[in-house]
Length: 193
Image (cartoon, rainbow, N blue to C red; front, side, top):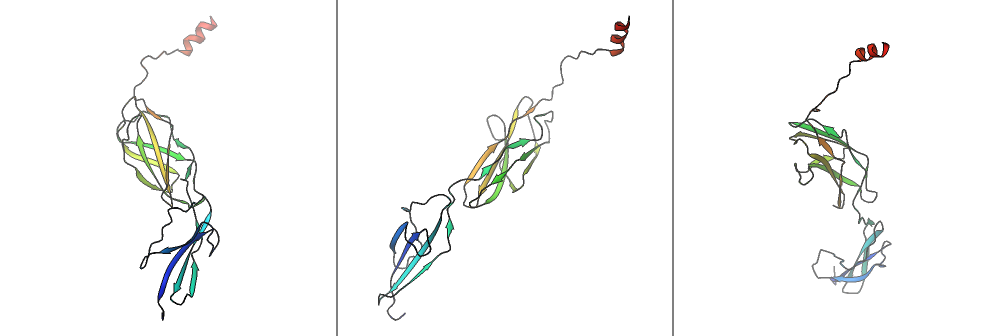
């Protein structure tokens, strides 16, 4: 406190109090933000930010953060599997799907959401689904002859997201137009004679 703070610097390294990635660089007086736009970071590596404060007498103190693991990839989503591939429902319908797996080894998955779309457009907004591995989209109005898809979007703890689309569920509410009925008793009588 006697000679005051002369300068504050930071560096980035792969070891605590190491400067392998970015050498000591001065922070502006009264600055509280540290940004390193030119730091070449690699996915799944751990980096440390070190701060050096020097007083007017040239004495300094260095402190390092705990390691921060870099996550440059979105979560991995398994398949989105509808419970059925055809439905006759058109009013107040529910589409069920299972998610076969969601993972993010680096920062973890924070949440997933889902939406329903047809072949060209979304018919619902995205709905938060937490970390559930099942989707139950309710209250849907479905058009005959259309295919509908469940779109699952999962986000990791650094904000990266990935979408995955299910196979289609086809709406078919029209019964067959012709039915041929064979009477077994009549066939058996014919065969016995």
